[in-house]
Amino acid sequence: MRVLVTGAAGFLGRTVATHLTQQGHDVVGFDLKDPGIDGLKMRIGDLTDLDQVSQAVEGRDAICHIGAIGDVYLAGEDPGLAAAVNVLGTANVAEAAVRHGARVVYASTWEVYGEPRYQPIDEGHPCAPDHPYNITKLAGESLLLSAARLRGLSAIALRLGTAYGPGLRPNSVFRIFIDRARRGEPITIQGDGTQGRQFTHSLDIARAFDAALRSDASGIALNTVAERMVTIRELAEMIVERFPTELTFGPPRPGDVPPATVSADRIAEVLGWRAEVPFEEGLADLIDHELAGG
Image 1 (cartoon, rainbow, N blue to C red):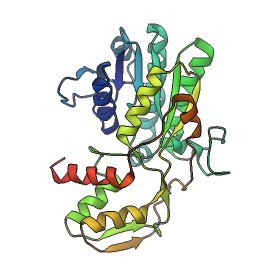
Image 2 (image 1 turned 45 degrees about the vertical axis):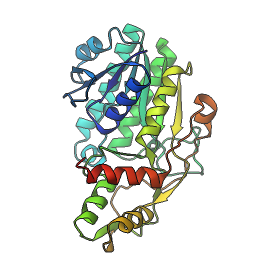
Image 3 (image 1 turned 180 degrees about the vertical axis):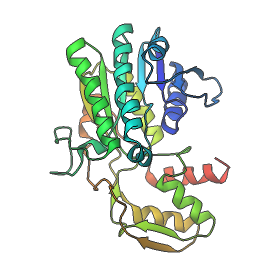
Image 4 (image 1 turned 135 degrees about the horizontal axis):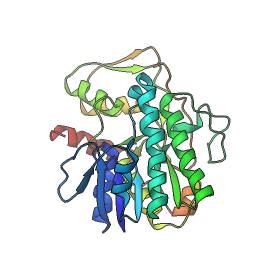
């Protein structure tokens, strides 16, 4: 399949583009810069420019739309930028896909649900995002799925768990904890550390994109999360086992998404997907990657 991967210069986009290439797809990346991946063809362009997006989509069978303002801190500081990229950019991807008859697999987020009303959260749970990041991601998802309903676009959204793996941005909690522990500095946990996440390895997410590309399912959103819940304290303690240092605690982080258990039952039924990378194994690989110089 001829696939365009938006956001191919980013952490998750690089992983997905590499995995799809290994699975035999003809992959072209689209981003503001060339990540320099051996064998990956790139189209340099801006998601907010419809002409550039449409030119990149021409001749492609499908789009893995991962490009976004994915940094929660940046989205909070610059909501206008988040709206331009995550909302207008996704509208442009949908328009280009309709024009050229391409299927779209969209990287949404489990954070669109907001405060849980019941758990585990399934896809029928109301969405009540409350931060510029998850607000704009849901808006992009809604625009894409509306094009599936109204214009015949073949599209599916994956509501991804919190992704981790080699190549994470430096301000991720994984990189912050690892970098501080390696230097022998204390690790500071925001809050009491009981807040948890269903951290999902980037390779498992790449497998989900591949499964979604090969599926005929359309017009739906699917939770794409690992089953295991890992608390921030557990994460810190695993890193301290590797690099002994002190654990300290600070005030809770403002605007943090409340912890919630999310169900991945539906994606198992629709796509036959479940996360496979054990958390300890994925964390060890990430640490080894950082020790090797990233």
